[in-house]
Length: 280
Ligand SMILES: C[S@@+](CC[C@H](N)C(=O)[O-])C[C@H]1O[C@@H](n2cnc3c(N)ncnc32)[C@H](O)[C@@H]1O
Picture 1 (cartoon, helix red, strand yellow):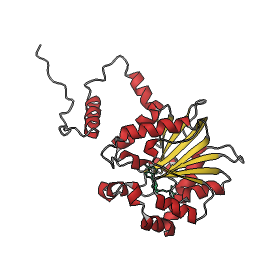
Picture 2: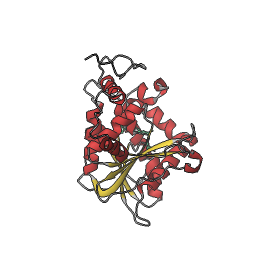
Picture 3: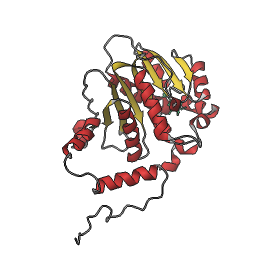
Picture 4: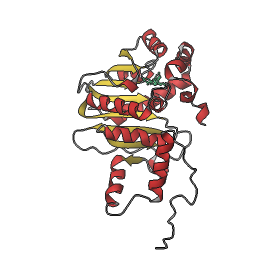
């Protein structure tokens, strides 16, 4: 339910206040989930074995995800918008360097700094307009383009995320592609409501890379555990020559885009995009 989502309740710097930050790190179930997600994200980074790497943790919070990086011998820097979450990270004596900052303003690091990036349960926050002047597509673009710049060529960024809708996910992937990333979505346990998890796996240039497979593939029985950006590009390529404009898909996408822009749009019906008879 959208209204039950933390992103709908308050801006992140308010939602993750002192009380929530404490709750976050005293709840053993929460710690277990965050650690599992972080370990999977680190696995998807496909870092060279037995080599300490320099990793950025976006939305590092109280440092639960960072601790998994430390355990695996990596060095890290964490960025988070909530000072209360970072205070808890300091209290817990996490090893990473901590930066208070809003990812929507971009990543303030030198070009090619990081060997990899992880982000656990944070990216969907960027799709909300918490201030009057917030424009989610622009904030996402600023974030992804500055992120791309501070990553070593050929490195990966893995985001575990909880998108609110398919159009939100589409907006995120569009802005990532515009910033130069390739890659796609890896879905673990796609047929399980409880265990299903989404990881946006982005490649920052370099040689072409294969998108990893989602877990639970055997039980997935045909459900897609990978959706790569190139699938979409190929669809567009194959359709070359045919007019995509005015097709039902094209119209639905355009209407969705206008809704995202806050414009008034007529509801979709079974007649949307239906061919009209030509009398001429
Ligand atoms: C669910 S918590 C995850 C924390 C962390 N990954 C961990 O394992 O403890 C999501 C974090 O994203 C941060 N966040 C949300 N929006 C942000 C933004 N615009 N810029 C930076 N951090 C943000 C929140 O403050 C929160 O600490």
